[in-house]
Length: 148
Image 1: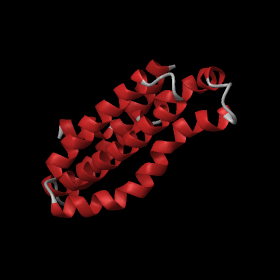
Image 2: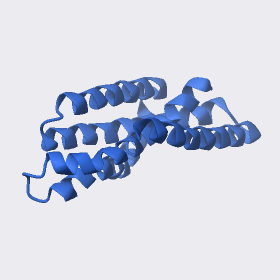
Image 3: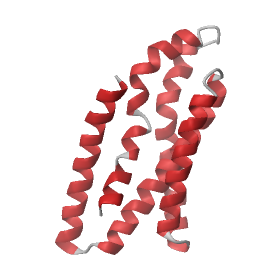
C-alpha cells in the first residue's frame, strides 16, 4: 500500500516541480525563436503525452503484468529525469526527455490504479483512493516547496 501511495506522488513531480525554473529556462534559450513557448511546453508536454498514452497503457495493463508495468514506469521516470539534467543545454532534448516522462507517468498512473483495484475492494478501495488523493496533494505541496 505504501509503495503504491508513494508512486502516486510521481504524477505531481512530472510537471509541478519545474514551474519555478521556467523564467530561467526562457532566458537560457532566448536565442531560440519562441523561447517562451518552448519553455512552457517543457511544463505542458508530459500532460499532453499522458492524455495520449494512458488509454494505450490501459490496453497494455489488460495484457501484461501490472506490477512489471509499474516498475517499468518508475524506471523510465528515473531515466527521463536524469536525461533532462544531462541534456540541459538543448531545449529539444529536454522536450524529448519530458515526453518520455509523460509516458512514464501514464504507466505509473494506470498500472498503480489497476493494482489498487486488484488489492482492494469496496470501502477499502474508496479509502485507498482517498489516501492516494491526499498523498498527491501532500506531494504537490512538498515538492513545490523544495523546487522553489
